[in-house]
Structure formats: structure tokens, C-alpha cells
Length: 209
Image 1 (cartoon, rainbow, N blue to C red):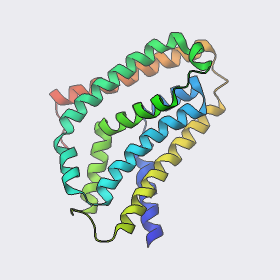
Image 2: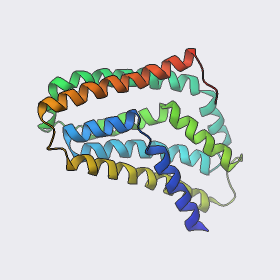
Image 3: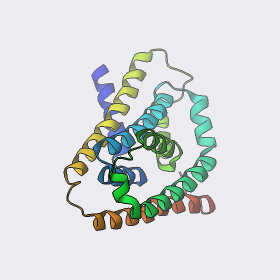
């Protein structure tokens, strides 16, 4: 039974991390520009945020779940603005790819940006909102072991996806030329900013959830 709970968390972690979005694009572009460590650390930032949301769901912390849902408009605003900033920065960095590849890894910064981005990503909140509903309400659970196994499963599932993605991209890292990398960064910058713009538009034209 305990192993099934862990596997359930593993599936949740992979399913939330795997869909293509701004974090995945960042992970890909950072792996191409700075190598496997940067891509993996970026993924770990997202996995940590996923585990944090998972702990709210798994431990049945009702007040925290309610707070996150109630503040989703502000989180969406902050996340949208941050995505636009990252998109512009990624687009501009297309002209400095060679300098970045020379060793400017900034791993802590890579971790922090994806951690914050995942926390404020509207889709992450919606996804875990479904997890909150599936697990049912409760201000803490009587047996912490199943909750801890669920959280561990979510974290491991998310990490597994980012390891697979970063490893796969790093295998072809030497293929793109500097010209290709500049084009990739420009396209990625536009797409990331587009996600941010979509988040801001959703504040004016709210979708049903």
C-alpha cells in the first residue's frame, strides 16, 4: 500500500512537470547554452516547488490550500510579469550565448528563478488544485507516513522528468552552432514572454476552473 502511494506521487510529479511550458523551455535553453548542470538545477528548482505544493496537498493543510487558491490572481499577475521579464532576458541573451557558454553558470540563480516561476505558475496552482480536491479536506492527517510518501513521490517524479529532459538535450548540445543557439534563444524568449502575456490576459478574460 505504501509503495502504491509513492508510485501515485511519482505519477503526479511526472504528469505536472512533463507538459511543455515556460519552465521546460528554460531548462532546454539553459542546457544548450550552459550544459547539463544548469538544466538539471533549473529542473530541481521546479521540483522543489512541486514538492512544496505536494506537501500542502498531502498533509491536508487546508488553510494553505485555501490561501493559494484565494491569491491565485496575484500569483498569476506576478508569474505573468516574471515570465515576460524572463522572455525578454532570454531573447536579449541570444547575442551573448558564447560568453555564457564560457563558464557563467550561476546555478543558484537558475534554481531560484525556476523555483519562483513554478510557485507563481497558474497551471501549477490549477494542477495541484485538482490534487487538493482528490485528496479531500483536512487540517493535517492522522498518519503522516502516507503524506510523506506522496510528497517524496511527487518530488522524485518531477526530478526524474528534469533528469531525462536535461540528459536528452545535453546529448545534442554540441550539434547547434552559435547561429542556431541565437535563433533558439530568440524563439524561446518570444514563447516564454507569450506564456506571460497569456497569464496577464487571463486576468482580464478569466477562464473557468
